[in-house]
Image 1 (cartoon, rainbow, N blue to C red):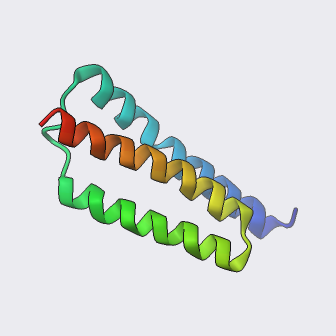
Image 2 (cartoon, rainbow, N blue to C red; image 1 turned 135 degrees about the vertical axis):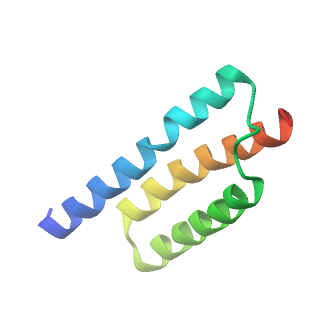
Length: 84
């Protein structure tokens, strides 16, 4: 694996992991009042488009990282709507 793919993979891992604390906190507290519905909706659409882009260019790290991030972001969106 060349260095640029290592950087891309590391970036994907770190930005994906960053969503776990928020998802866990929202799930445990059953509160999502401070989370912006419009921001997470736009973010989720953007991440979905990254998945499509990753598929289009054949980049496994882009697809994997963004798929996991998408699942976490949609989970937070569901909590936001459920715990309104």
